[in-house]
Image (cartoon, rainbow, N blue to C red; front, side, top):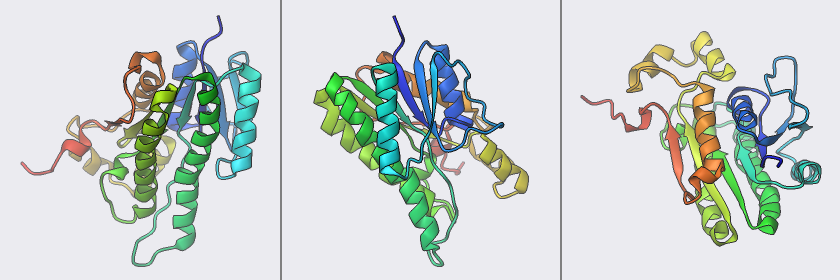
Length: 248
């Protein structure tokens, strides 16, 4: 019997690609929605189980067409992982309106478009699971990170709202909040000195940054039937970062 079907946005690299690999390894069929599948992408290449769709999540019509294609190709939509997102920096005092707008449009509105489109199929089935990839920045402030923090906090609020609206329709909605994870983007920040890796490791009780696959495993748990009575929850996978007050 064919496995369940998961849609993963931003699945070409980093946490998204690790999540796609984890789902495929666990017997799921996976549709990866992304803007770019280049030579650096490390998405699974099992063509019998993996569908790659170029999708602009900021374009509502592009989202609807891709999710429709997934439903027609696989015959069902069992899980949505809203992972696609961008990070741009801007202060509040000297705010770059275009930066704030683009980050909110991608991280919040793009995820909302996907939730709405996939949710319609799930309501028709009477079952489904949505996992929104949040961030510790939804809970913690940092200089120049306002656009990103605001977008993730907004997505966190909608995660709870959707869980309430869809609970009796068989759809669960949860959030996973990664801490500092060794993704290509974060590695770039570490190497450029934009983010101080040593300081981060010092603030994490476990003394290290995380790995994409450590986030992927939690996402899979929340998407699967193993978490059948879990909804409206935010699970932060951060090595204890948010629990650390920094005071000894």
